[in-house]
Length: 333
Image 1 (cartoon, rainbow, N blue to C red):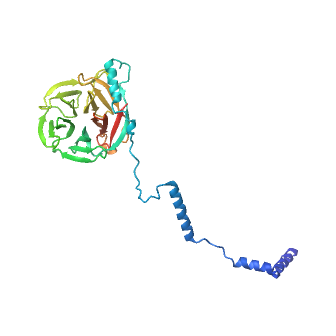
Image 2: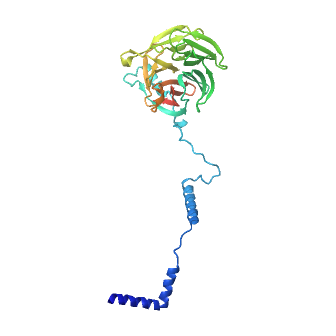
Image 3: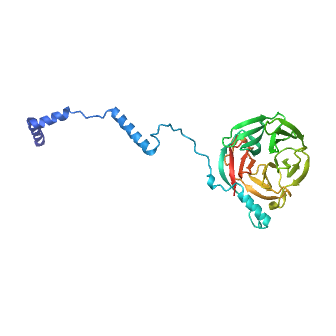
């Protein structure tokens, strides 16, 4: 029809026009340009380099950078007021007779979270000359431990009949209790040569000293004060808590002597008892709940708080537990 005739006429006219024909021919002959793959690769590398330098200003340094794990929690030295300042203040209030109505339970603040052998069944813990002296059970041993790294610098393995318990250092000697073999092993502090053995009639749990006497716990509610030369009992005190209707505080475990008080772990309790060594009265508690929230599933509930060490010269306090991967330097609050 008319439309088809018009279309044929337009085609004839375009073919007759040389300019239109050349343009059509060029367009047909011209292939679409494609960007080479190597150009894409170079552009990608340049873009990545720009981003890396923008994000990391140290990228241009020649020293290779090693990815490090997140830093352990620490408090700057300038912000540290001393581990036991709050405890000493409470002691003074008690002496002044102004302690009435005060909360006798102290809290804590973590100063440092330090590594600890998670296979160590900690039973005794002591600070000495910039290192820890540690006594362990199960795979029973006496150890010298680096504070910052947790590395065992020196170790003495106990005979199979002994299960290691508390330990303390007094006048150039290390005293190490055993659990059911009822034997206290005495070593030379420098050489770790065994010097003596003392026998006792109870179980051995924790031990510390006040500079004169050894102070021992046996899992009961009693503390015995002993002669370090003979291990004879000088006196005993029964530990009771007036804040709990004067109930006996049993299962006293690892001990540490701090500012004239006996600090005592209580088995399966996340608190430390502050005990008056003259009367046995619990004058307060240090609540450490939540200190180690990620307990080990393989420990079957045995990874309890147990281990107190104190540096009296610099007023530093550390706590740990059985099979714990950490030693915590804390400040009492």
